Length: 253
Length: 202
Image (cartoon, rainbow over all chains, first blue to last red; front, side, top):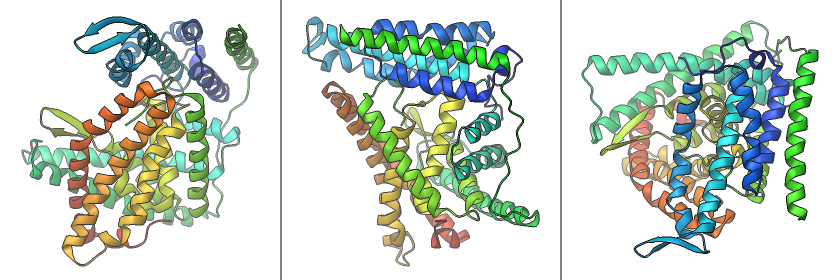
C-alpha cells in the first residue's frame, strides 16, 4: 500500500533529522493556528512554500492534497459569511453576507492551508518509523511509541487482508448499493478483519515471548544531529520566532 | 469527522489537548505490555476502516467504528484513536497537529461512554436487547461525536453554531448506517469469537 506519497526522495528535506522536523512542525502549527491577522497567516506561507519548492516535491500531488483537505474549509465558507454579525456586503434573499464573516473565513482558509503545507513539508517527507523514533528521543512515553510502531507495522498487513477480502467479494460479483445486504456484507468484512487481527495479535505476543520479551522494547535508531540539521533548524526557528514577534507587535498596537 | 487546523480558538485547542493527555495516560496505564499488540493491531484496523467507503444514496461515507472500538478496547480506545488520527494527520493531512487533542477527544469520549452503557447489553442472551444495544452503540457513538464537534465549533465563536448544527443533521444517515453496521458486526463476532466481546483488552 502506497500511503507515504512524499516520503521517498533524497533532498535536503528528506535528509533533515526527524527531531528537527517534528519540533518545527509542532511549533509552526501552534503559532499559525493562534494567529489573528491575515498578514501573519500570509507571511506564514513563506516557510513551507520555499521548503517544498527547494526540496522539489511533486507540486501537482501537493496541489491535489490541498484540494482534498480543503473540504471542511469549503463547508465553513457556506456558513461564516452569513452567520457572522457585521457590515453587510451582499445579500441572497433573506441571507446577508457580512464583510467580517468573509474576512474570518479567509483567515481560516489561509491559516489552515499554511499548516497543511507545513505538515506535508515536515512530516510527510519522513517515513513514519523515523518520525516515531524521533518522538521516542523527544521523551514521548515508551508505551505510546511502541504502540505507534506496532500499529504502523500492521496497517500494511491488515491492508493486505482487506484486499484479499475485497477480491473475494468482487469475484462473487458483489456490487455495493444502498441496501441492507451491502451494509451487512461490509459489517461482516470488518468483523473478519477484527477477528484476524485478534488472532494475529496473539501470535505476535507469543512470538515476542519466544524472543525473550521482558516489558522493554528496544527502539533501534541511528539518529544523530549533523551541523546542517542544526543550522537549518535554527533558521526555521528564527522564522517562527519572527512570526511570534510580528503577532505580538500587532497585539500591542 | 475532523476539524481542520486554524479553525478553533486557542482555549478550545488547549482544553482538548489537556483532556486528550489525561485520557491517553489513563488508557496507557490500564494497558499492560501483554495487551500492547492487541491494541496496536486493532488501532490499525480502525485506521483502515476509515478508508472503506460505503454508499448511501448517491453519496458515500466512510466507516467511523468508534462505537465498536469502545466495546472492544475499553479505556485503551483513547491511545488507539489517538494513533489512528495521528496517522491520518501525518499521511493525509486530515485534521492536524494542533487539533489532534480535540479530534481525539471527539471520537474517544463517545467510545468510552458506549463501552460503559452498552457492553452488558451486547452480551445479553435476549436477541432484542443485543440488537437494541448494538444499534444504539453505533448510533450514539456517531451522534455524540457530531455533538462534540458542534460544541467545539460553538465554543470558538457563536457564528460557527449554525455550521455545527448542520453538521449534526447531515450526519443522521451516517448514524443509522453505523448502527446497522454495528448490529451485524456484533452479532457476527458473537457467533464466531464470543470471547472478543467478553473481556475488553483493558
